[in-house]
Image (cartoon, rainbow, N blue to C red):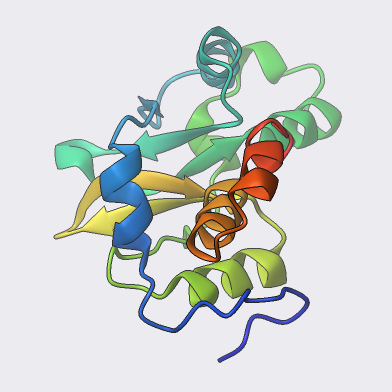
Length: 158
């Protein structure tokens, strides 16, 4: 499957999410489903990240809370925002990927569903997280376009 709308820079199908995650590391900010949404926002602000992964018992990934989710909750429940729990904003089926998934497939899923981050699950547990910019920078570097990769790395909104 070809990633619609994106050049692949000649990268072959043998590039996998594991090529990014295991170099990037497994630092992911998490929160429990019963925590308040405002706590998730606080974690994002303190750590300059745009997403927090919601984990249940034994590290099971239940979903994510993004900046967009917080803004939507603020509009939908302005009076209740201070007492709103993270679990009240979660999708039924969170989008995740596996370290063995092809980068282009993950990029296509992100583009199609209009989100910028995806938890990486290995053996049923959270192994890391990839962002759309991680995927794009990796492809630029692999294609020998490191100068452009450096430019993309400064663009925090991806």
